[in-house]
Image 1: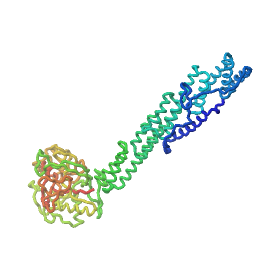
Image 2 (image 1 turned 90 degrees about the horizontal axis):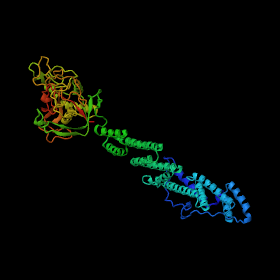
Image 3 (image 1 turned 135 degrees about the vertical axis):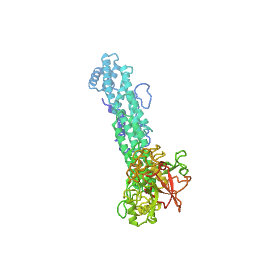
Image 4 (image 1 turned 120 degrees about the vertical axis):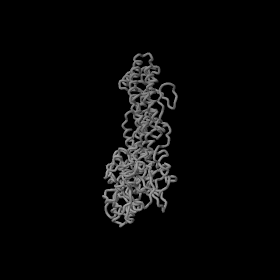
Length: 623
């Protein structure tokens, strides 16, 4: 059989070259850079129709004319032998001397000859056998499809009404349809016209597989379509459009069942996403100590949250870092620290109080409340602050006095107010100052310092600031109550119960007994703390913010001037201070306060020069 004489074979060879180029492009590795999409292709004019059944329509419908060999009656015996020999050699139709042309010429001379008719039948069977073999390779071999078409045209000319020929021609038509569908899908892939969701390129291959399940070329087309979608996903990821990347990967995952290539692509896209998030985070946390840097970080965080998946730990850490820097500078809520002092040693231990808001003051119906504690109002701290974990001790105040030769108010005045054990009352006593305890005796360094005025407390805070280079001061009244409540909103710092929780602090308890056996007339029933007078700092449990003795042990100076109510009070927690004011505020219950004075909202006005055995102080520091 010599098929090279037929121009259709040349056309199919050219098509095969195009197909090879298409498949090389469409099935490259997903991470390869795709070539620029060329302009839309015109249909290749060299691609003829090979439809060989039905009406003869189309640009190049197949027809076969047998090569002519002139025979006479005398040539019949020799021609029969030549035809039989050609059939035996499987030379069926290409030349005039092949089996089918010879048998057709012989039939024209001897139409009743049974030997000639039998030879034609054998030739037809051999022809269809060759065609069936060609069809097996016609899915991805252009030459095989061309050969099958040639054989179909010959078979139709030879026996147009034969059922076997009709069945064969139907197979050729189907093979031609499958070829064209595959070629269309490959063209769309080659030119980048896969469709907005990849469906344009997929459709032809899926139609092929509906007609012929498992066809290798169509399966390869599906793989190439999947690769094209993966490339789209990776290009979207490179442009930080991870939402589009996810959509493309989801579509790619639907192309083939259990394709590992999609999971590999997910990992690559995830790596691109993670690298992008990490880079944005590193840029964002580079300068969180300034307002400008924090503003830049928030812009970068918005981009991180746009591209990150829910629950991304790096994004969450980035948000936390910004929040911490915004509200706490270089610190974290609940962090304890001390500052180094220029003269050596450390400043008092500080605790970082979390930022937040609370309702300050007493409600209208609160039992024991007075008008100066009202109206209750909302206060918001946009930034955290640090507060000394306990009241300043005698030892800490001693360092200040010795370093500065400062003379506190009680020292200069020569007296203060102490508890008199004999009378059970508070009375002025000479020779009492910051070195004295509640009864006027020498105080241990671990006890909270007493007998100090608000100006003494402010002088200590100024000294700490000079020694550390940080901003120390007395707490504002709002800061004190916020830290005292520590997240609660009850009548007392521990809640609404009229009995303090176990080991809350040093309060007037019904179980407390003085050195001479005295008991309180107005105390918390059934409560005892083990001390008559102040206890060493940190003797009881800390509150929820990690602070000791707030609302117990000693009452404390705050920085505010006294105002008869909270009308027009600051809402940001700042000190409400009027220059030159003489009357200042004392907050918090003490070892000798009545239960009413132990309420969270309790406040008292005191002259700025006042000193006594119940009032000390603590400091705060900006962060």
